[in-house]
Length: 154
Image 1: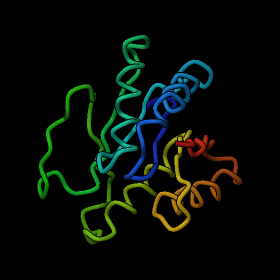
Image 2 (image 1 turned 180 degrees about the vertical axis):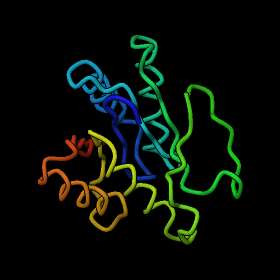
Image 3 (image 1 turned 90 degrees about the vertical axis):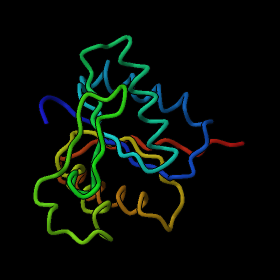
């Protein structure tokens, strides 16, 4: 990963109501923090909204890159780079990771290698919340900077 980078983590069942706050966070990371690469998964509502926010921001900031995280080996589960994405990322060393643990391990790899995390993880018993806790441990060691979006009242 070249330059400052940011990863997204959030709940699959995220409402579209979060989009304005998500877009504002993306723009803040570009303008104020100098982020050039955004990495997102593709397994739920939050990932879809995060990708949409970055794609929209790319119209104003064309040097920004959007990267799709692949937790499963591309030979096992082929996926072409979707429209609006610049590339894909399959973390090194994932070949021997059991399929059941692949998403969690891929997420940990990215958290260990990015500068920023934008999170929407309010549900206490979730993998998203656990990843935020994992990132907070790294944050205390002068690592990743975390932006937590708050739950939107509906």
